[in-house]
Length: 538
Image 1 (cartoon, rainbow, N blue to C red):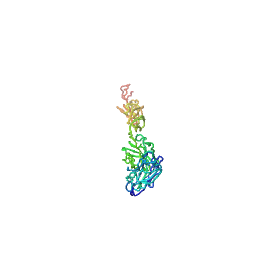
Image 2: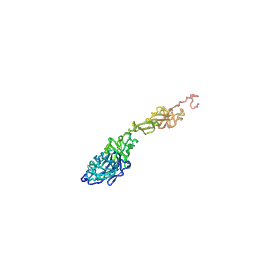
Image 3: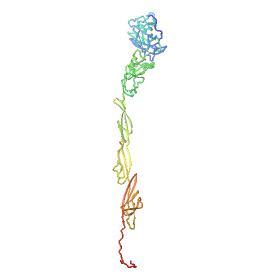
Image 4: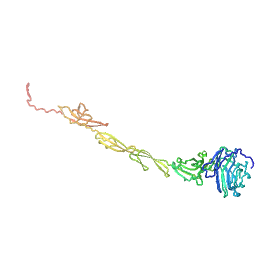
């Protein structure tokens, strides 16, 4: 088609596509000269083959097709096929626009079609200057005499649509569709190249991300359970295989309330997560795009991320599992507390175990859901009391201790009461009595020839002595000795006191001292009753 090429720059970014090639074990795209090159990427196309092949583009500085000199300046495709009339090749942009490069499909192949023929051609914008192979039209049409065992390397306008009609973003998935619509012929796609007018910042990758399937059942566990360290290995149903481990990593997208993403992690250990309902989805992503993975922001949901990755303009090369594992984390019940007091040497039966010492004891328990908690016993073991008291009483008296009202004789007495802690209090009373005895020996009689008599306290116990007199008695000399002197007939009291342990006991006795002072009888007179003066008579 005539006309000048509208884009100011024709810089190529080579995006060669490995199309399900089973011999490729690692990513073949690498940056070369501002573009991305895939080497050794032949793809066999069996009879009636149909497939979409994705190249993910990120980082374009000029991200708007049709603006600022940006656009698709060419598409370079290399393939062979035994019947060009069987296939169509189209290119779809991230915005969903499709241009048919090779077509149509129809019954116009003759003479065994195109066995041995290879096309290594470039498709240009309709405003460019196509240079087709000699004898062929500038606008591609498969119904031409391509023949067998030929090699073609011209440039053409697309079969349907124009490259300059692409609009929207550069970044995203560029999808090459190859369809074999008729039977009996096969071919190979050898490489695929998109030529952007402004390659600044562009990072392209053949996106082989495949998250497989998470076939594990849903998980219901208690918070903190070791079983929440999930083992969720993806399953790949043949012919699907994991993408090359050297270029792709696997992570897990954990969604919480409302599906909001909580974490994207390579280790789905949820043992530290709070109780609630979660979803865990598998995520396969290209290592070179790890810095493009979204950070949880409190609003992005698992569904939104899955839709973004499934769109024509994904934020990075990645794939999420369509099936996710539901995880329910049950709240552990709160610990229970039991408080108890006992008296030694008793023990306390707590949930079938006996505890005999003061302390806090935690016994692991589980509720009806199997969730753990602790039953905690707060045990206080009070000690019994053992008290010994000593008391001294006077003879004939009883103990003044109210706990021993009947203790009236020297000896040991025991009573068991309760102390302030409610435990047995054994009180032992050692009771003793003070021995005190006042004794007065029988005194003599006061006579005319013996007008005082001694008073003797012999036989009395030692102590403090006190003599007193009454009824005419009269003490002569000291009154605080064991012995005293009575000077007249009368009553005499003798008191002996002893003090022990702060207790003073006394004993008293008395004695009556009598006197014999009657005049003797008049003697019989023998002799004369009268005498004469100056005479002596007997």
